[in-house]
Amino acid sequence: MTNVESFTLDHTKVKAPFVRKSGVEERQGVRVSKFDLRFLQPNQEEMTTGAVHTLEHFLAGFMRDRLDGVIDLSPMGCRTGFYMITWGEPEVETVIEALNYSLEKTLEQEEIPGIG
Image 1: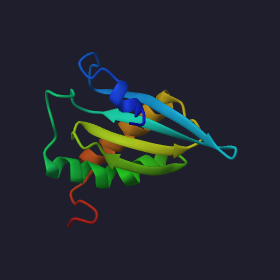
Image 2: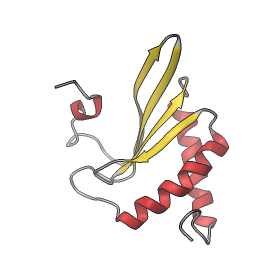
Image 3: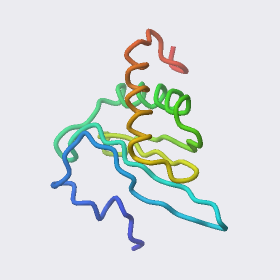
Image 4: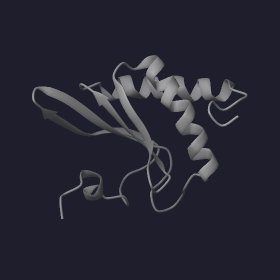
């Protein structure tokens, strides 16, 4: 089986919440970065489906407001956070600042885009 970086992370040792750059790949001179935006402790907690779906919609927009080059932001299957893929190599601190902004903006919202 192919080695998947996130499966090599010892989920019993990490302490949520955290943001980490979990990988950088380069193909034909173009780099993309993958970030682990972890909200809850793996194997101990999980977000409800509604919470994941709501955050997915808000973070997809608000993260792009503050961070250039977001390709995708998708929920983790374990529902403890999100993976974000970007062009280039943003610094973790820059991602944390964009995430904090996005969460603050989320708290201000009264309607969920695309859900009604």
